[in-house]
Image 1: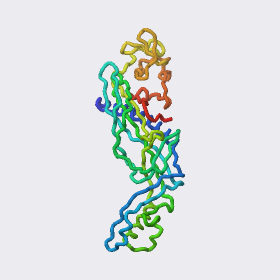
Image 2: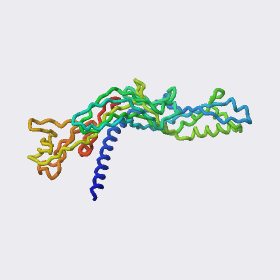
Image 3: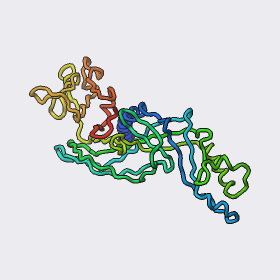
Image 4: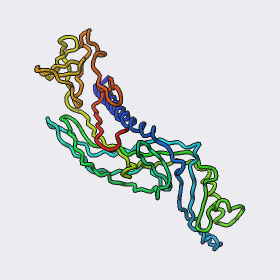
Length: 336
């Protein structure tokens, strides 16, 4: 295999490992929200949309019927929920200095994706519960919204590319309409669908088709989740670091799991500690684990003896070796 192809293959594998780790972290939050999600069936989501029928010049009787309101409700037995997210990244900073640099969170702009324009529905997270319900004055919201900075600061260590990121959560709900819930109304009639019968007017022909679609159309909508206390859009703010600096490598083993590194330090892989000759110190969270080639290891110190750090997501194992990314929660929803 040519060197250039090998480099591309290694880069692709590393990018996949980083992407998998980031996805695992986000899915952790999504799973927590989905486990707490339900629909308030005492006040379920309701589809409401104002429609303007075609004006029939041959019949002046039709004119007063405009406009009309179309409505339908989600059927309880077939309703499903899921949670997903939009990612709003901020500018990235690559620290080429030999010391850490403080970064400050800035305002960011969130552009909505596939949001509902007609559902009288909303999702609120309060007291550890996520509930989808109706009763909202409108489900319309701006397609572009500013997310105000919380004034957070984090340090970007030397050799890292860093940025803040906001995850904006949404509830997706889908199913079929409740039988008989599809209706058209105006200021003259509460349920136009039930009074059409065999009428042949221009308006009746149009309304009949709308009534049929209201009953048969599959329901599938997406709405952002609001924090029950502040009424603001529910977000998680994280600080992401990706390391691009040099990587210490073991060059010789002194005994068992004690290795000398190419930067002059010593490393104990069994205890995950470093030494410069004056005592031992545990590896810091932002320090990468040294590379220990198999040919340097002694027989009594296989890789299986190396200490593996774990976090809230469980043990990372080999992923800690491969990834260069670290994701830290700094504000907003914490997945609890």
